[in-house]
Image 1 (cartoon, one colour):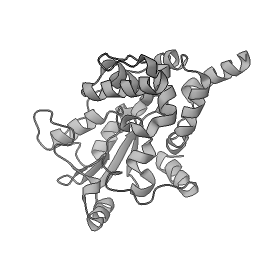
Image 2 (cartoon, one colour):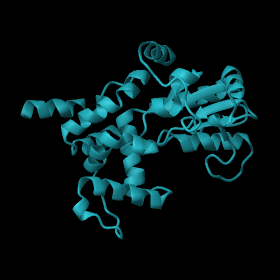
Image 3 (cartoon, one colour):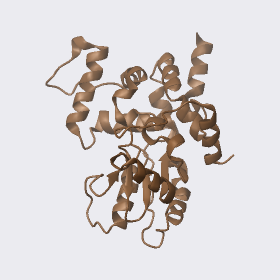
Length: 260
């Protein structure tokens, strides 16, 4: 079964948001000059793809991610229909648990580009789970287990942790190509060719920062009940894009059951 067929099957048998609002569509970049639409998902090579689209426009230095592109929600309904019918549309997805760990490492350990946002995020988690230890003037370090515990019940509060369905709306927009982060070396050149831009830009190497052993190391620290709850929140992401449900950590839950 192809990726598009799997997604179409999912959309036929599940309910979804058929009328995304302007805010719902804020992560979909539109390049009117080259007739391309791209849903930029955090921690799924989005910086690489925005840089490629910038190169296509002749930008020599990195600018703010959305500096050159309008967002799909900014258009009128008639303009949206025209673009859906005539533009090349693509998105890249990643195994959900890998993506969450990568998000944690960048935003809650390293701090990323937005240090203030990361600091506030850590404060919110500490306030929720151990309020007596909150210190407004310090870093308020959190563990990966606390991160998963918090977002297994509050996932919609953080855009970096939103489900793919709530960011890219794949059942509504009907993407022409669905790439996987895990096969980006093969998918990347195909996307460039399908978009008709392979003679103007090249696809760079992708460096994977989160491996399977690291995933097991981090998730083994998380109580199974929170992993199970997390899996239910992201079940649609697993199903829509063909990832095995809780695949990377399923055996951790099994071990816990046997040891109980």
